[in-house]
Length: 459
Image (cartoon, rainbow, N blue to C red):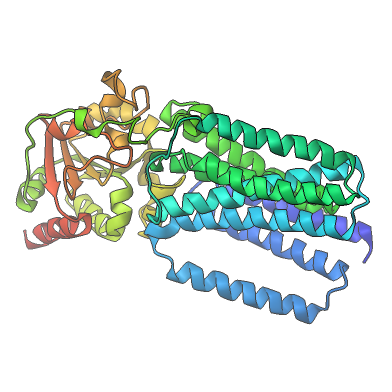
């Protein structure tokens, strides 16, 4: 196949990636953006495989099998499992880059220094991404402890592991064709997989949105390096786009928590030693029944829903949408306040509400809702905890002090939906629960919202 034609098709694919990525920045166009990017990748893969001499029948079979697996997983996965599914996707991307670099090196050990360097980067970063993503998957799915696992000398151990990888890489890049070079490459693979585990284990569940975003960036960087290894332009472009967008999103996540990336990665936030749940605020809780909450909402001119992970666990997004429709029919202004790190992955709440067909113009970002929070009659907090905790504003001893929050405590009335008084994912008690304007509406979020819907319909 003519190289000019291939590169021309790659340019079209790259343009589709860029336009698709741009469209992902808005909930209204995100689905079309995802389809555009997928189409660009499909075109690039078909052209690459045809250029490699692969028969079109095998290409079609691969598309059929891959599409079938993707459709099956997409249909079967629950919304509560979406974060760990994203972690798996990141991990698969990482292991693909590792295997590609290994296969290319195995076939051709006579590498230049530059190709040896990018082969090392692809394999090492891909290995870290894979094992780190598996740890993130385990934490998010509850298969391993969600708390940060820290121990004495942990940072020193990680430094030694990283130093070993860099020394092995330096020697490997000088003598990649030797038997010793192959041994070093195998050592790099093992070290990479180990480093992914030891660097992710110390990160608590509350920081998982940042970790997922960072691992996504890692997978892109590994793919970009793999593109240099096999001299594939579209892989370089796609990897660079994913790597850059992941870094940008990671930075946004860190700013949303008012913490540096280094603090997220190395502070051990969420460990049993870092967070003391027993020393949190205490006070009188004011419980409310479904009838009590109904009368409060029925009299409200404006209601702001603040969703959190509890919304996903209860799968209450459709019930919330129905309640929102009933409130609008009652001439109540309805909005949904979204915190950047609510849930277990970036955009988690947006995905949930979009599934329930909540109008995009009702989704309000934290920086937009806070200035007018004093005028909100009722804030309904559904399963959120740390992102509405006033301790972030006024308690300098709190581990989350300085983190921007949705300032629900400033609303005229706050209704908090929770199963119990247990602290959130960060393990910190919430002073909002004891505020004079707060009422606790205990129970499963979906059942609680459905009870409110029934109250409205029976009126």
